[in-house]
Image 1 (cartoon, rainbow, N blue to C red):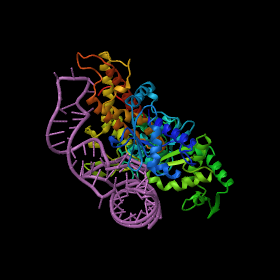
Image 2 (cartoon, rainbow, N blue to C red; image 1 turned 90 degrees about the vertical axis):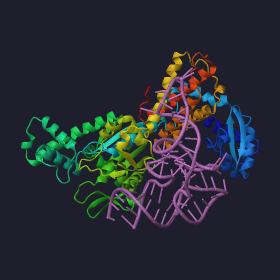
Image 3 (cartoon, rainbow, N blue to C red; image 1 turned 60 degrees about the vertical axis):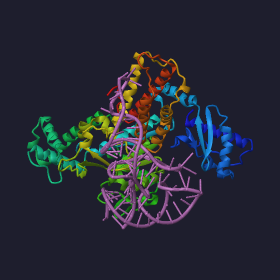
Image 4 (tube, chains in turn orange, purple; image 1 turned 180 degrees about the horizontal axis):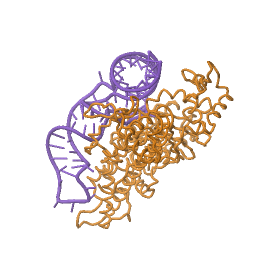
Length: 552
RNA sequence: GGCUCCGUAGCUCAGUGGAUAGAGCAGAGGUUUCCUAAACCUUGUGUCGUAGGUUCGAUUCCUAUCGGGGCCA
């Protein structure tokens, strides 16, 4: 008996009461909130439905609760119904009804927790999108971890997700990159506004080694272009490898220039003209974004005929939509939050629904901390911490977990020294250890002849078993919320709770008999619970892109 | 100045209307003849930044304000 079952049971009761005329005419909900009470004395599950609904039937909450409670106590699997406080309905389940789900979890295996809430949704999720002027830094690493986890969470709800990376290999930043390469290749310092990391020397050397002609003999402009073309390609390959090693593989790498080359920009502008949202003023072509909530209109084509940055955004969005994506999600850093109003206005100008067809997730910055004080990362000084640095220091699992276990609204401090120590500070070990334990317990059980040939859920009556079962039961709901709120950190936090409940259970309840002891139905039933926990931990870790080791 | 994120235990943070606000870490003390002690148990600390408002009920929603980070000007 799951919270969803209880919710459905209450809804059926309400319908029946209404049909019998015991409830007045008012809309009935399709589901009610079922929660795990903080205080165990309040039962296994509780609902605030009476307080929420009594008003619309002109009843006081306690009377409403009593009406519902009377029917609920007749439902199979419910052992006890109490009314408490202002009108909470507290439910206690038969141990057997609570434990049934354990078997379901084991049988569902990798599919346990998956849902269909986003079935049929064709989604484009764009994240990282760093230009190839250097390795992925800490900020980009956070989006890689969170974005990929989010994609997996959406997929687990049935969505068809395309992971997309948008980049540009021309422009001022890239010019600085090319000039820096050239300077280093000539044995000079990087220019004032250039990039200073050691990787610049490395890329410069590789460009030289990979070219037959003597590019240093070319004039400045030609040499710079040669370094740009070759350097960008090498840099991009590095980025792709880093991401792949981090467990993140994009389906589409979208080149900004292709929008101009294919005429997509012109088509987007033509479309907006047709819709009547473009106008000319001061020699420039404008999009009237102020119609849709932006604080001022935006120039699309400047008076000198060049396209403004937003021209690419218009074309890119329209391109995504024309590729059939119902939902386009952009994950951007906090430094881009100012773009949100104009992007939303653009979406509305195309006749789409902002927030639905186009959604923008803003994530806060990642700071590097050393000895408790923030360190300023500077590309110029080469003190940037990269994805590879982080992975070298703590490994992929700890890195991905640390970056995805907190809300993206929260700025994140990364202390490399602390993470390098590999202390228990990092909760990924706690969760992974719990998983490894489930595997070793299962191995031991197998060698001692404990198998899953019997399952008698009424025997799972220890308090720690009730707690563990409840945590496992909540997993699908947590995944649903993680998808709905775009918050994969909820998965991580829940796994920590599951791991805690498992460790406490392990301390109280043995799966295998003491030496010389007989294997009983209880041992076999507990093996189901052990294995169900392994399933949940494994499924959850996989959504975060973190491995679930067999032993540690 | 405008916009945005944050403000909850000593530290790092969960908690998008419910009951006595939680976890990890740090501190103190304890647990192992038997499935992994990377574990478990016990123990202290809170004006949920502040002030109003909405509500039967607010850490949660609204308004104002203070403080910190960031972007833009």
